[in-house]
Length: 327
Image (cartoon, rainbow, N blue to C red):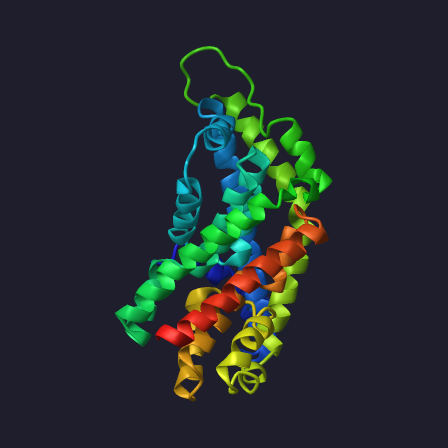
């Protein structure tokens, strides 16, 4: 059962009952998408912030940060972050709240970015759908390559020392070490003071990023409802040498999660477009959406954001050529 089903029920009631918009129209799709994704992201943002506030009481995130920065992990930290991203069923916008939590807690930036790249690309649903639509070989190649590009992309971005290009909001939070939980005597696991502190901290974060959520999801809702997939199709049915980078670039506005884009990918392959080109298109659509970029502007300056999009796009294009060669 979809854990977010109640949110979809609310979105349906708002769209079709409260606003009385005709089902199946572009306006209905856009409004339904906006209500559902806004509720989902705010819920995730609150839950993750609140949970990290409570965890910080007895397992300070500073310990994780110090461990990752002081130990010689030999790439294991990047692998763990990328692998963790594959088991979190988040789209690019939904993974942003957890990314904010990592950055806020002082987790090494490159490791955090490895998670941000991998999280939208691969999850259990995507693996199952890939096996069913394109076979085990394609699914295996996609999963392994998705983790690799996340690790390499995070490593490259980490070596660029982009911390100075984080926004002042994040730098201020990092300078004070994230959530500082009140000291409470006794053996109570989570006291009222701890819960109240975490609650206030979570509301503060939501207030800080709320406008970005509305703008980002609003852009995604417009694209979802009013930009037809056929608009992209005609630009991909050319020679793979040109089609791969073009597919990666034009996919950015098409905001969707991997499970949602796979049926579109199957249609494009059925129309004769190279599978490698389509997978490159799919990766860019789920990892580099404009709405998630708008959300990330709360924590990244434009310079940081341009580096992130540039490195990730370059990695996806290389993967596209690899897919064309081996699939």
